[in-house]
Image 1: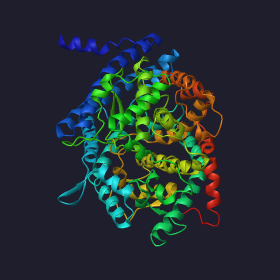
Image 2: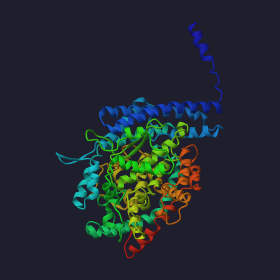
Image 3: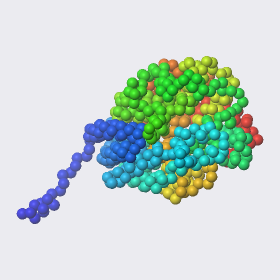
Image 4: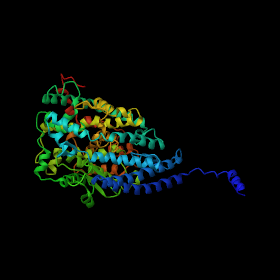
Length: 592
């Protein structure tokens, strides 16, 4: 009897499955969004607690929350593949396309590997957050203090010590990162991508290879401007430190640039300033007014309310971290949060009241304003049109923090005349233009690592090869594969894609030009501020509210009428400076 039953079972063919329908695809993605939103909120809460109170316990809590998001997203992405090739409603099709790329990190389906990957990710971020350089047992410096020394010191030996001291903190990350790459690539392959880098490059409404080519095209537009700035700055640094320290015609030692990664050069403005005066010192103005950390944020909020955006919720002021706590380790890297994907907006910073963080606050609040603008969209559309948009919005607003804006908000009595244009543009270029190649190379390095083109035994060499190629910078002393210098930059241990920042460095000027045109401004682009422009605010709000519901070219067109990213706006903005730099560089050997 048992044998007969077994035989009967074996001879029974499984019932054929009906092909999926468009209605089933829509129902699937709607249910997936509801489930993922709950997991995202849990992960945001866990991430906030960890970032503002780093302990072994909060590290574990964050890792577990991330693991649940990653595991379920991978499962859903696999399930969604049964709808591939179907004719679907546009909204459903777009959501299904966004589902597998909603994460910057995907783990293998093996639960043990999922746990291992998320724990490694939390550990690397923890190593960074707790990182200190201790010249002596009684004198330990965190990144804030090291950055301050690097910004202000003009002693080459001290600068070398500070730079090398911070870069020691990432050495323990190296074996963890190698394992991280293996596991993350395994996860990406399970959902149909060649590697994690290919997954990242798929988030731009174009094939991954086409995106890589687009980045190269944009860099080609701006490289001549960077080269002119590099040539001029090197000559001035040679005058300051001597040819033995800064040889003419050679790369610049990175520790002299006033920034740990050489990504922005504004801290050496005093060494390279053109003739004439900017006419004001924003840091001094803020200090004279007695502005504290929260007061600095109020200026950023005021800019957005002047455009017609609602004030930040009261919970923002009660729950944000504005200053570094004295009693615990936190992640000081500035970030904007939308904890409940509705209105629990927060800012996490260790604010230093001054001109740098005045700009940073405007940038971060741009994220918060964007988050709130699209909070009525379905969950998978609750993101920027692409990640460069999210980074670029706040920076575009910060471009409006001109002298005329400072006069309007009572920080400056009178705007300087045109004699202040070159100093103003130089200060801007040292941050905006100097950043461009760094914004490019971080992911150039990771794409090569994820693809296997760069092997673990060449991690550090490849990093410095790219820094030399794109930035024309070299380390203060020979580095080895015992070092892991990429890990000394927050976004590498935090696994935050970086191409978004390069795109933002381009898009912010494109956004700024469009907003200035909407505001009816006539004149040089660097003089425009859209502060208090209702028409500009209305146009901006319309684009932000779209979230990711449409491909980014449509979102860009909603603001600017253009459907292609274009660096000509940054060239327009800095045109007077470029002409001046080229004149100053006559007779110099530029390049490296």
